[in-house]
Every structure is written in C-alpha cells, then in structure tokens.
Image (cartoon, rainbow, N blue to C red; front, top):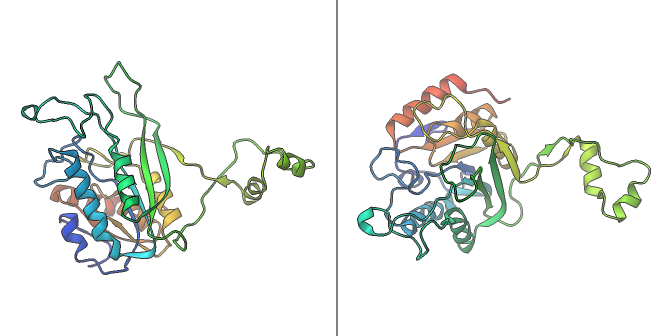
Length: 286
C-alpha cells in the first residue's frame, strides 16, 4: 500500500493489503456501539447485539497482529453506553443479561478480551474532557471522560519515549532530600524528573472534546491528544495506522510530527474531508 494515503475501504479488507511487520503504531477511535450513526452501510457500531460489535472489533486486531512490528504500540479510544430497551421490537434489546440502565462497560470488556488474546495492556488513560457534552440524566453524574487503552505486542522491547510534564509547584529536593526520600515525601525518581525539567506524565489527560475543522464529522478528537500518543509510542519516521480515520486527525498529526500514515475509512465523504483537512492543516506540529 502507498504511504500517506487514506483508503476508502472497510478496515478488515484494508488490513489484508498491509505488509507484514510494517506498522509502528496504531492510534484509533472506533465507532462506539449504538451511539452515533455515520450513515454508511455495514458500518461498525450499529449491530443489534453488543457481543457482535465486540467480536468484529476483536477480529480486526487479530488480523492486525502480523502486520505490526514487534516493537509496535496501540492506542484505542472507546466510549461506553447504557443498557436501554426491553425487547427486540424496541430495536434495542437488553445486553449481556444485565438490567436496564446498567452501564455496559464495553471498553473494559474489549480490553479484557484483548489481554486474553495475548495483547499487553500497559495503561488505561483517562481522557478527561474539559468541555463535556451536556447530558439530560438527573439520576446519575455527568460522564466527562473516556478511556484510552495502551497495548503492546510484547512485554519488553516496544518503542516508548517517556513524556514529561512540568511541575506545578517546585518539589523539595535540597538539603533534606535523602531524609525526605526515606519517609516517602519525594522519591529518587521524582528528583531525577525534576532535574530533567518535569515529571512522568500521569494517566489522566485533560483535553477538549474535539477540534474545530472537522467539517460534518460528528466525532472529531483533538490533535493534541493524538500528538501525545504518537510522541510517546511511535518513532519519528515510523508508520502510523488508523483503521477508522474519520476526519483525518491521526493523519494530520502524524505528518506534522514527521511520521507516515495509512488510514482506512468506509464513508467516502469523510475520505474527502480528511484529504481537505490534510491539505489545510498538515505541519501544525513540529
């Protein structure tokens, strides 16, 4: 397949044409189950049964495994939904034998199944949205985060570049540093990070709900969110795959960081949107 190209194809069909051992990093946000209709036949996320949805998603990553380098990394952003409906005629049957209004925990069911298939889950990142969408529910809290799962093929030897964030307040590291270390106030690692200009980034990331410029796409994720994942999990000249590339954000950030990309998108209108955004925005990240 040609690099730096978005293919108007189903992701499973597209994976067949990838070279084995060619992908350095996967960053993607698959369609969430029964939450958004992208208006295209055979789209993922509109299955009657949530187990079928999970099976299709897992089938994709099974097919991707030989296409990924041993040192590759994977970042998957998934949203959850609630059990609603009481019967098939309602077009929303209850899932997993759970009660109505129960959170289905689909992202975590996916993550557990991935681990059972041999993937290594290194982190669950909480993408906390600075501007969450309003929710009408009055009998629960408003959800303002989504999980991002960080997977690898191997337990060791995968590509990872540590990312640091500045300290908000200056840590105590002067005269009594050794004594403080013994009582657990500040450890050796924290002192070393401070010397490097920051501390190891935690797993709760605050970013907006999405960027402007996504056109008619209804689920655009922010470029800065993608940039953090790619800076940590992909070498500068690496190849990034997004099998659900949507409005092209992953491709835009990858090119701006000096990386190559391949994207799959089933909706032809979104393919055109991605190409336009790439022409307008590539190079924003240096």
